[in-house]
Image 1: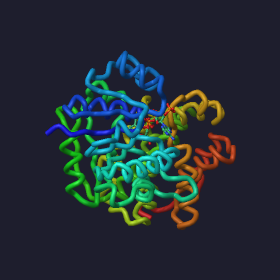
Image 2: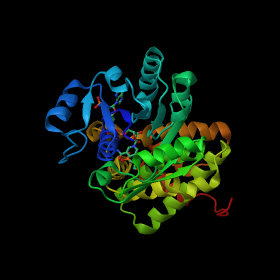
Image 3: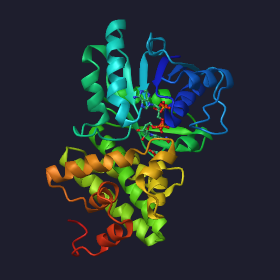
Image 4: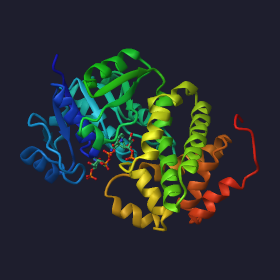
Length: 338
Ligand SMILES: NC(=O)C1=CN([C@@H]2O[C@H](COP(=O)(O)OP(=O)(O)OC[C@H]3O[C@@H](n4cnc5c(N)ncnc54)[C@H](OP(=O)(O)O)[C@@H]3O)[C@@H](O)[C@H]2O)C=CC1
Ligand SMILES: O=C(CO)COP(=O)(O)O
């Protein structure tokens, strides 16, 4: 049955997910705070800043009025970068209370909040009263918007402590090119999603420095060990990290030139400054912020994360990229299973 779905955030991922839901026959309202972008989406069916050479479904309606998007919605999908998530969730929470609605909440944000180190679902739960929502479901996995736009085969995970919520999302999003699995490990899904961006920056740096496949494979594998260590310290199921929202997303982000995190790392490896890289990307590079949060969290919890620490030193302490990467090899040798 056709559902009314509000999608908050019209960047590359929000707009493409909204389009997928419209293709699946749902009644979708895409909200953006940018009126000019809304006009272009409604008149030309394009979102040129975020997805080039792509025509959106005629049925997909955009609006800059959050109330118009959310009114009557049975499902609200939030696709806002971590930095703006609390603000947008707060507005949504107030609106749902005013409208007396209780939709299922889905989010696709990948990161950890600065200073509090909260996961996206924790921020959302704090900003939307439990009386004004059903479950919160995490949609995550290896899924570059550019690939989904061209109907490349994609598989992701819907994670929710209440499996019925995850199954609901599975049914809404799945089609012949987008396959959704379920998982009840929200902590693992969110840590996998956030932390893989740090490793993707590292993989880009390695490429930019001129190292090759052996170095990339080692970084990805040892990076996964760090992701698992921190996630498990917070109660994640270690098996989630060998799933789509763990190693799956790590592979796609650390090996694809579509990845903003990989591209940022590659440019840093070639000697560009972080300010320069961030200014020119024009889209969010979540890993830059997540590196800081994860590094501080690892120090606080005494979790060994040498790759994260090295990337933190490059991003925040101006350490030379080559010295940082080569330094990883010069550490005391150790057991792989430690
Ligand atoms: N792109 C992808 O392929 C994928 C992305 N993700 C994740 O999805 C999340 C969103 O990423 P993505 O769509 O790529 O990001 P983009 O940078 O492409 O777009 C972000 C969108 O959010 C809007 N926005 C940012 N802050 C606010 C705010 N405070 N209030 C209202 N709107 C805001 C931006 O508006 P404005 O244009 O005004 O800046 C823009 O429309 C990230 O956490 C990312 O890691 C997950 C899977 C795949
Ligand atoms: O999360 C993503 C793909 O699964 C998108 O990664 P980037 O933000 O690095 O482009």
